Image (tube, rainbow, N blue to C red):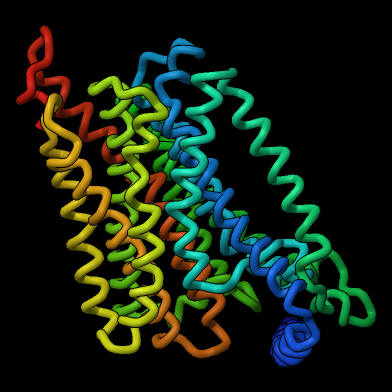
Length: 428
């Protein structure tokens, strides 16, 4: 009886996978047909709506960075670790949910989940969003009241979502094509929600341990508990994806050593950027005591550099090996971090801060497309969407995790400093 039951379950899984494969083919045809039917105005609205999603995703990060000092004064926050949570928590939420969101989009339709395209311009809008959000917050903090920047951004985001309802073309989802309608159990396994929940729990607990340790210290009993829970959830995720799930979110069998190395490079580059951007703003606002609006103006070079790099990288990927692009990207991020780390208070902005703002977007906008290209070449066509989602997960999660690691290092370094007024050498 058990063998018979196993055969039935296996047959169901095969049928489900067949349905997914046939649906992918149907979706490809449907999406091509829809694109051909769009008028130039509809295409412009569609592209603009998707680009705005990237702008707002990064603007919400920038609008917090530029007013960290104002927020800390408003809530009487004196622990730097609590301020870093304002940035780490945002990136943690994005990074933890990307893979599961992609699967839900595959199953229920992409329009409800608002996926984005146009890779070159999409990447170029990242620095625009960061600086745009920072400038908006700085203006409200200086002339009105800082919470208004978040309320305004919420209203604009709602307007863009409404625009997306009309601008983003619809296509039949896999769920709508199924007859009869699947049961809740079938839906959960088809979307791999159990593994998604375990993955989110693993990422959240592991990250929570590192970032909260900066606030309360590693000696606090619940910090090691969170760390162990994160590891245990990750082990459970691996077990379910390899042995149980009929349609895993991450097919670990195709994650070769080369793929793992590329993901590690992406994590290093974007993790370094996470620490860089946080300490750039804290240095400007807390150490140099630059007004938020002026600091936003100082942070503007990534706009032209990021847009130019996005176009340049599209030219280079066809002529330079992706591995060399990745090496150059890592070197640029390293240079940006070193320039900021050795910046002494009182030095002119143009000596080290300005060059660091040139290197940072160069590194980021080269590493992201290079990683996507390597991942796409390493995996089959059917896994390329998952590959890009995995890169996006690593990008956002590494930004969040790096703040916890950097905060721990900062604590260990500063606790050995003698009490008294800081000197220039204390900032190296």
